[in-house]
Every structure is written in C-alpha cells, then in structure tokens.
Length: 211
Ligand SMILES: [Fe+2]
Ligand SMILES: [Fe+2]
Image (tube, rainbow, N blue to C red; front, side):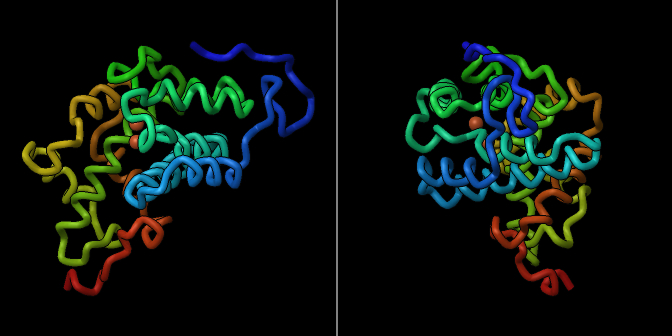
C-alpha cells in the first residue's frame, strides 16, 4: 500500500504535498534504526552508486541518493517485515509517496509485489545486489580496493556461482533486462559509484599492493 498523496505544493522543496527529505535527514534516520556497520556501509555504497547513475543520466542526483541511502532502513530491526516496515516508517515521517514507492520496489518478488517501474526503481533493484558482488570481488584482490579494480574482475566472479553465493544473480539478470543494459556496463557504473566513497565503505584498500 502506498500512502495517499496530498495537494501539490508550489515550494521547491515540496513535492506531492510532502517535504522533500534531505540527505542529512535520511542519514540520521538510517543511524537511528541501524547500528550494524556492514549495513551502514551497504547503504552508503548503494547511495553513491545511485548518485553516479543519476548523474550519468542527467537526473535528480539528490533524490536518487537519498532513496539509495534509506532503502534497507528496516532490515536490522525488522528483517521479517523488510520493506513493509520501511514503508510504514517513511510514511509516518511524511516522506513523499514517490520516494516510499521507490524504496519498497527494491524488494519486488522477494518481500513486496511493487514492480520497479521508473528508471530510478529499476536501477535501485539491480544495483542493490550488484554492489554486494563488487564489494566481495574487491576484498579478494591483493589491493582489497575498488580504486584499481576493473569490470572484468567482477565479470569473472559473476560466472563462479559459488563465489559470494548470497548475491542473487537472477535478480541482477532480471534488472538488466528491465534496464536494457549489459552486465559489463552496469558493473562499471557500480565500480565508479563505489570509488566515490571507497574510504567510507572500507574498500579503499592499498592499490599499491596490486603491483
Ligand atoms: Fe533490501
Ligand atoms: Fe540493500
């Protein structure tokens, strides 16, 4: 269920009758519900990739980033109600319906029936899983870094189904079809986005070690 939309307001920072959430607001909400470092790093990685993908398309970088940052808000405390609990929390915070729907749609076919429709939703759905494969690949390299990593290293690991087996490759394949993109191109975008926050997500490593 998506919350009802209010009247459209003319002020720039208001859309669909709700205040456009700021990055600061999203981050403090994330910290309020999440203490697990790994989950926070995942959120930061997805945020950075969403920002990169928005920038590449000339779309709303701030909105894409905020949605990426908040997408797993409920996962630490309410794993059994994943997505549904976030919908409730964000609606209670007065977040715009467009943001809430986008967040919920990342669990399509897994914990919700909200199919990704917009470009933003399709990208979120696909890169959510792909950031996991890119991070896992970086960590087994001598440099333990995304800064000097190329897409072909990740593609090699993609084929090895026993590597990072928790990464749902079917979800990524479905997402790529929706986006009409090739795996190699999206891997490259994910790497580029993650490089922007390499230090914060623990994937700066030591590129010199790659020799
Ligand atoms: Fe999730
Ligand atoms: Fe996620």
